[in-house]
Length: 442
Image 1 (cartoon, helix red, strand yellow):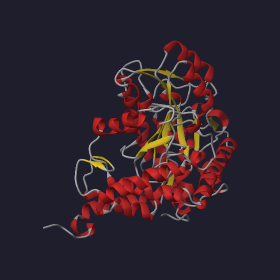
Image 2 (cartoon, helix red, strand yellow):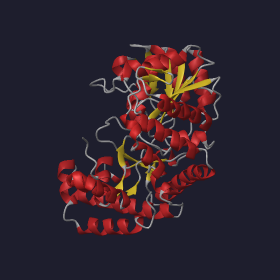
Image 3 (cartoon, one colour):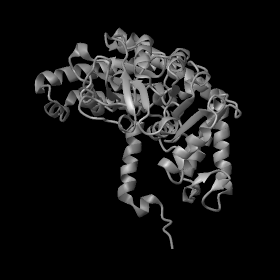
Image 4 (spheres, one colour):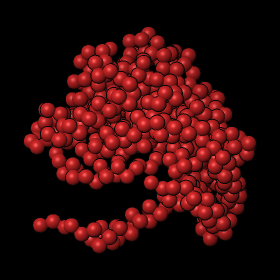
């Protein structure tokens, strides 16, 4: 016996919440740099009966029977992953079972150096990710700073990676792995120089390209595969697929690495893979090879540069004064407000963005910046000229935040009192909804 009723009939309470979320997304200017919108084919894969299947192990080496077609799906996904980045299967391998980017980073690091190996990554406040070994003065925040011995390099005062500082720290600390590739860094990277530093201290080079994978695949940014030993990426950000991850590893440079990576993913950290996600990743990788997707990635960058220009025309400071990719990082210090307050105001007017640390910050809880990204709105069809409306609306939101802080105080709990029954916010929200609903929603 099984239930085959549609969700609307079986669980109207949940169905109503899901409809509300869909409405919110359609009526929101989404500037979350790590979010995007999946297409109908990816959705179809995510809801497929392959979710029913257990398939611990790897193709042709499973611990359960009945995996003939699951093997074909995973092999197809691996083949397409290598093809997308123009990688030879003789030189590179890929694991597509990791459930998330954080998991992939931990699994890759464990495979390379084991417990208590030494890693050198970028500080969270400078744009690094939690899983790059982040800790603060009070505690080891990420498990990667507990499992491994980590040190953190920072960007310079202008927001750029200082490779001379990275080299000095590497020579002193002698890490086993150097990590490059970040979560809130608006510029391209010199992977060749990172490789030289890694070679100087006999370290692996791991490139985390979760935020820029499509730009790498389409040739819009520098290529880390020419220099890295391991490359990790999520599949749901600029790649526009399901929420999953991949670990690429250079077999030619590192004999034996394939077995280490695969055994780290399963059985060390995970059990059965999520086959619906692997199918959805395979589906999306096919789209990445199309000319229309290549045009999309170029448009994302064009929109990001245009947004940066319009913001600076509005006298809004940006970290590094611009961008090479999809990220625009606001520096709000001149307005005297935190990213948390801007995020709250933007939530009230149907703009999604996230508070974010900037290089001058020491406090990650109440940062002085906000991170913007253009992938989702580009997917909906926005172009360079549309970025002017967004920039102007953000300036209005900043001014409202400044006004509310003056009236209600700097404490966030007091500040939020000004967000309710606020006609100015209601008017601006209606303007946003009217503007954003002109764009298509997949």
